[in-house]
Image (cartoon, rainbow, N blue to C red; front, top):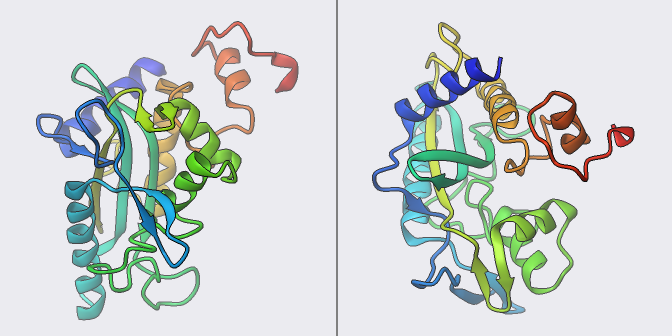
Length: 240
């Protein structure tokens, strides 16, 4: 099964992800130190999004917003990935989505409103609280982030003072078009289904690298070892 999912993953990457010119998630110096700035009224220390990443995300989000305003029904929202590279191999670190509609009804998702200027939300990658860059910055600088982002810090950073990456971290985003074939041949998933299909494939292939906490077992280390996907000695199967 793992070999089959490897083929699915590689096919997906070949279709959508340009590894010849990857887009950095963060704005960094040459040694991987992330640029920071003071955000909001409190001027709290915040990690800076990569300039190319931000531009690409706004452009992708604008396509979805325009589609919503024209009632064209072409796009369901955005699918995105934070990843690293092992040579030419794309190693998924976090997969997610930002739907076109809000949690209920048919109004535009608040995460996409004013996407061309909104820094606080920006399709889930905003600088505000409860958004990826905001909460990750809190975990880095004030140690009051959620457990989810504590693991991001541990896995992605070699130091926090200053914040420096272990390796380059990249970003990919795509407006998800209705009727597009998903990672499984001859299937055309809706956006939420697509997200969990990708997470399921990525978890089997990279159980120790994937940082998603939803769509994976509650004890991923134990589950991965039980299935023979990892040989970590510190995994306790009694925890599963």
